[in-house]
Length: 456
Image 1 (cartoon, rainbow, N blue to C red):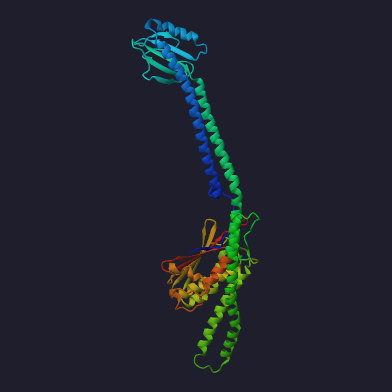
Image 2: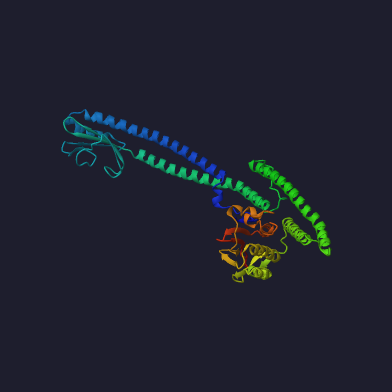
């Protein structure tokens, strides 16, 4: 499973993060509600005003139709002409047509049969230069009377309402978006700072605390709760580490003296040599524990600098080559020189050396260990693969803990601290550590960002 030390850089504000904030979504939701409310208000206003304008036109048309339609056939043409003369506003139009669709009288240029609809709206240019609303009345003698009224005010009002609706909608949407961005940036910046502080804490700086403002808002409540939790975790970890380190330090000296006294016994009784070997194993465990404690406590980065990972891999391979030759194990080193990463060369050689030591222990006689440097995008991977028994997927997290030994390794001498030491060194550097299946065997991969002279 990958183990990656989080970056301590302050996260940048991205649009994808901003649009997922609750403040941004709330403002957009309120904007949508306001937009719907404005649309409903404008719609109701439009319908009522439009109805008033059309109703007034309907009444005028109905009145003129009743007055003209009630005349006799001989009088209708004259009355139509009188109505045209009396319409000083110029908003009313009339046409009287016979059963064959021929115009008898009127100021509308009409040809053909009358419309089938009693009420019909005509666009500008269809019957007259302006939009008209017509009322058609079929008379008993076969004639048809069409009375029309100019509805330009109603059409213009409709256009204004539509333009106003679109403009209002655009203003509401834009205002809601601007407000959402403006109001979302503040909390997002604070969350970004909290994330950066949380990453520092998760990277091992348990003395660091999240900032708490004087506002006392929900983010301050979260920060206060997190600070209390981190403080308790720091206290418990210090107790556990202190007890472990004290035990390792206090027992190391008596065991060293005991080993020296046993080694001085001559002639040695049966079992003394085995006791010396057991004491050596215990001292190795204590040394590893103290080394891990030193790495975790010191958080040293003073020795960091650019280095060629291929060089440190070569150094570690040469160091463990005699041990591999004793078991007739081949260490196949591959990769190219010239790449660089930032780190402590001595610590990284120690980490790769621990991986080689583990691989040599669990690789059968005549086996093969592959140690290679692979470039993947902006990363370099130091990859070590063996053809031993491997580690079950369910145990890959546990083997990185202190003293844990997998089912396949319990019969092999060791302290159960090798991979834990590697994990501590990798964590200190901020690199990634992965355990994978080699089929058969195990692949251990250390991932590090490649460093160039112009930057990472």
